Image 1 (tube, rainbow, N blue to C red):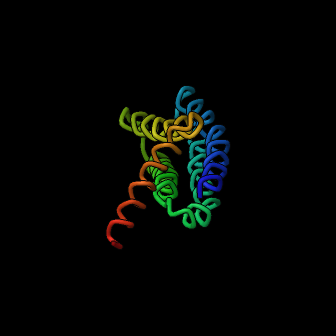
Image 2: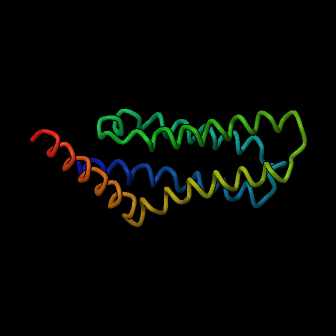
Image 3: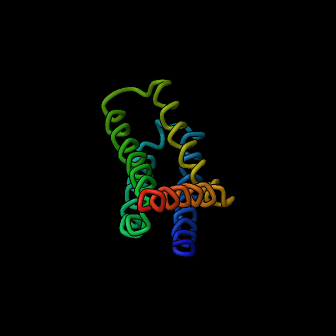
Length: 134
């Protein structure tokens, strides 16, 4: 589990980094001008979740799949809404919050903190399983 999870997380972090760079640029450059790009970034987040779904399922860490999938679907949905109405301040806040969450995931994976915290959860779950068996 350990090395497999480290490898998968590293691959996710590597894929998430360019998405986050592009998302930040779209937000900074003005969302009205970049709706198609934001839609594409939402689809890339969905694709990223789908690419790693089976591996993360096998490693019993599906929460990351759902987080990335939800972020991507939320972005695509909001872009669809924006194509039918004007951009509001709440929309900029929304996209910034999505960016901040995905950037936090990327950064904590890169620093090793994500893996360390996940290992603690696995260890706790393992010790609880052992206690219930005895």
